[in-house]
Image (cartoon, rainbow, N blue to C red; front, side, top):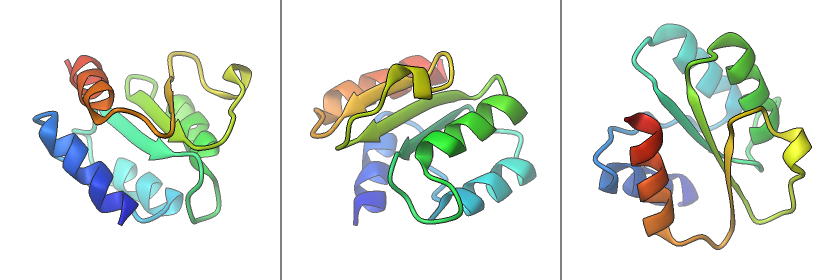
Length: 105
């Protein structure tokens, strides 16, 4: 359900979401595609890594990709890769839409 809500927000920003059910799937998608410009993830997610570790992996392997992370839990700025945008839940969808547009531009 949360994945579908996030997908709707991405579409509302005028972008085309590519859904991944977990971090491992996200990595496989990024390995196969060259057209991803933003990764939007939650800290808590299934798979072998959480959203922060996914963001670190993305930054290391695909530095140009922009990162947007959300969480209902506290996350230290020092744990996030440089340049990552972070929103605490609950967040206004308008703020996420605006940020996605900015990051994708």
